[in-house]
Length: 287
Image 1 (tube, helix red, strand yellow):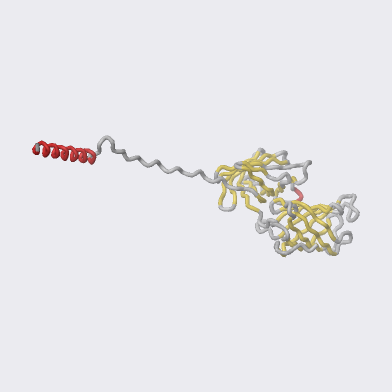
Image 2 (spheres, rainbow, N blue to C red):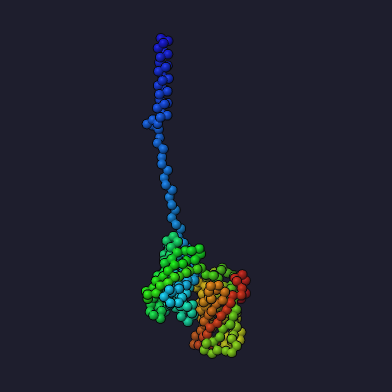
């Protein structure tokens, strides 16, 4: 009986040893190693173009430059420009189109895909209606690319955020300069000082103080910023002002003005002027 017990014990030891060895050699119940999955590549983040912008188109066919001023609003991968978008060949006030809806309303539109941008804009011109298609991409804080139009022109374009955007109230820009009438020019040009800022609804409000003019001494202004350009009116005086920045710094602004024929003062008068920024928007309203 004792010998049988030893044999049984020995057999059990042998079986256990074989099982351990079998397991160590990769038995059928051992979990197989898994192959790690390849890392996923995150999709490129879409560029944001929301805000006031200045665009410059430069023809490679000898047709000069065209400045476009607008305010883009973006939703997802699509965006549109403001209804008061300005298109100004050669940055010339006398050639500007837009900012007079419903007579002429110019509204650019576009799409973004990652850093790539496409913009389409249609506007009237001396050679007829023109549709421009701009294709480009974000480079730093600017957009750059090439364009073609429906009149056979092509070239390059750039877009940049407004250089001197109007900030939240109560900050204002102070401008100072001179202007003169085209219809009735004066020997001594009148001087003009403008205080201009943004109200809580993002509309421009301000005032102008004028010296040496025989028909007007002040204006109460309201209007809209369009990129670094702006459009202003004084409803009571029946006066309107359109201003374009002198790029690339935008520190000075050229403007045209006109009074309606029914204005109480300066009736029918029109002319041009230049003002320079003398104070950035850090001062409180003082009117």
